[in-house]
Amino acid sequence: MSDINTDYQTKWGLALGSGGARGYAHIPLLEVVEECGIKPEYVTGSSIGSIVGAAYALTADSRMVKKLTNHFVKSNHEKIEKLIQMVGSNKLTDMLNVARKTAVSKSIMSEDYLYEMLTPIFQNAKFEDTKLKLGIVATDIKRCKTELFTSGYIVDAVCASASVPGTFSPTRLGGTNFIDGGVMCVVPVEQCRTLGAEKIIASDVTNQIRRGKFKNLLELMGYLNQLKLERIIASEISKADYSIRFANLNIEWYRFDQFDIAIKYAKELLVDFKKELMND
Image 1 (cartoon, rainbow, N blue to C red):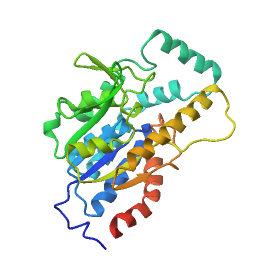
Image 2 (tube, rainbow, N blue to C red):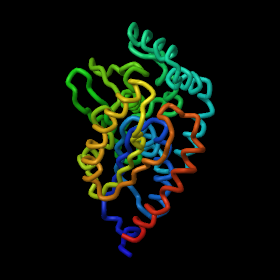
Image 3 (cartoon, rainbow, N blue to C red):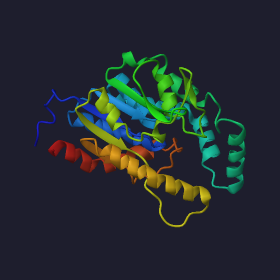
Image 4 (cartoon, rainbow, N blue to C red):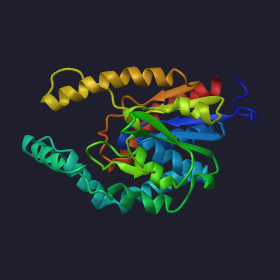
């Protein structure tokens, strides 16, 4: 066994990826990291990874992150149900209604939806208030590039990083519109290295590719987009020292009500990964 648990000179980093509600799986990973005696100094996050990552950077305690997330789910029950209703319908008529709405507005959900949900968690906290060095990625629409936020109000950066195109409105910061970090950077490994991390644990929570027959054109388009994402993800996590892929965590990205289910299955998938960390 290596001295992974006692080598405090190594600067560890966590790169937490995008994937909507499947990002709940990041929380059991944090628990495993702590159980292995690893003390990360750097955290980067994309989309849902930015939310979990920011909470962890502020508290440096996986138990607190779990409590905050559980409170988030319960206190936003009505908003989450509305999101599921708006995004999750498979009926063609409902999908057409969504298409009409997005044709005349920036998003399906209200413009302040994310801010209203996330402000109670982060309030007025700034990047300099964190216990761990934090980096949050979002996508600059105009310049079509990834932006790494390391200063300012955390809630602003998190909202920008989690603004799923079409579902949530773009976040305007410094005169620029930003959308979901996962559009161009699914798992921010390079960004974690940029912050100063020497060894990086990457967590990918994107869904498993669904092959076979497709019910409609939207499913086919989603499949083709996932194929492209697979190449991006493989390239990103290859640059990490350790990586865990929760590909079998079969939860739709918008099902933020399935917190307990995600946690349960993530723990099962982490059993072998914990052994890898302990025995490497």
